[in-house]
Length: 399
Image 1 (spheres, rainbow, N blue to C red):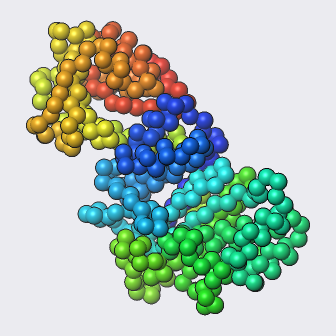
Image 2 (image 1 turned 30 degrees about the horizontal axis):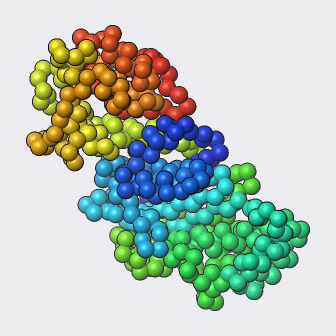
Image 3 (image 1 turned 180 degrees about the vertical axis):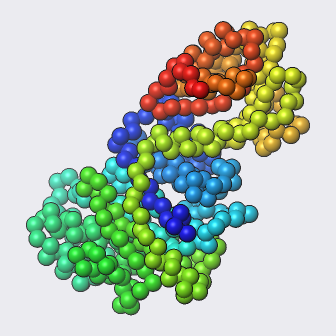
């Protein structure tokens, strides 16, 4: 089951996308996720929301080995994301995940059996506010034991770090059970030995069925991971799980799986994973005559066909879009696009060109690809949308 234990993180400060790059990355997500990203006003908040969702789809696809179109991620009333299993069969008894973002990092953690909660904090205080004034705003969320430890930590910097350590652990726990911040945080009390062997009490009761890890993620950011029994989940989240009760031996094995180190990803890597998953669709049977090929784009649900035509410089591009979910759909509304229309249709950043021999492929900017079309007007081509963040290598040949 160890494959189900994943910890991925992205430093979003290293990603400065152009509007086209951002739009392309967003296009890899299902349409119902788009509003959850673009509803934010600040660009940094949009970046965090987008990367969080890219992490979710990429991780589920990679770990469970299921196609992107099979992945349905929803949220409980309290806002916790979950995978809707439906007919999906996995080797893991209770695969679930949790995300977090703060400061420069966005991260995701998954577990194959136990509940998993994740929280990142960047120890900062609001401008023009002292450390003491800041932490006292949250004093009611801590037990007297925790509060005494916080205020006795030492210097103001020590106090702030101690505050965020406890806060991060509390957040990881309530996110694991799916309750959100409505849960009585003052009823959750943490004990530790130099921040190792961390244990939890809720309402005064020790809970040995839970484990916690606290570490530094990078650049001063702290990250907490919680792992615990599914029976602790709130009812709305329990209903999303495959199993809630386990034999003691089985649960013990799941609880004591190693907590792996965080695997640092780049946005470019996530986009590459999803791009391959979204656009790597097997070629369909020939339906337009000798030499033509088709490809189904599952995100935009567009069926593209490029075939020979005497009426166009490069051949006719047939675009069909009518809620298509399979290439066998006979009720397609289609039209033929000339070269000028094709220019408007292609993504500006980059596309991938597959030559009919299957031995090589070219990719580059929209203008470069169109120029290739003109030069190879007697050859039929199969287009696939593609993007390389940071700039496509124009006219590069891949063997």
